[in-house]
Image 1 (cartoon, one colour):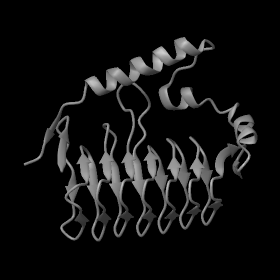
Image 2 (spheres, helix red, strand yellow):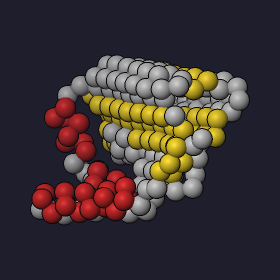
Image 3 (cartoon, helix red, strand yellow):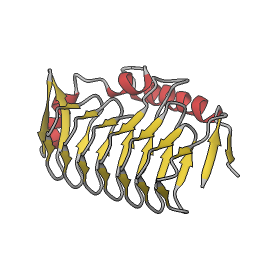
Image 4 (spheres, helix red, strand yellow):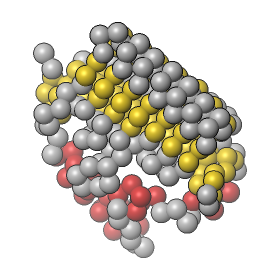
Length: 204
């Protein structure tokens, strides 16, 4: 299904294949030779989502841009020849060309995955992490920013320590508060403002 959002509608190259049960919403561009499988959601919240040529997105994955009105804009690009395996979630990030993104991977906003990278099953590339070309993130590892580079670790506590200096809520929502309940209210208020501004309609 194709859906218009706030006047923007998906653009699909004639040489691409999009399964009937996939949903494309808003400012989405699907390049030539792409394959978008069943039950995939490719959604723009305003900022663009672009799949370059020959990208494969397998069943059940979600690819979505974020923000742009009540929080920082995070578009999505997926470079030519990259594979996104089933059940992945890509949110406001950039995936380079010829990348292998295995089943169940999560890549968060502001992350950049360089050309030729390999992300193992269940890996998480946290917000703002920059992976150079040909980098690898192991199965069920978390990649987090570390100075000018990144650390990939299966040790969640180590990842949390490294993330402590990278304020996720400030990056994702341009907000911060010491009080957790107040922080959550602010974040949810921003999200409600965003989604209440969406006007969707099926493209016929």
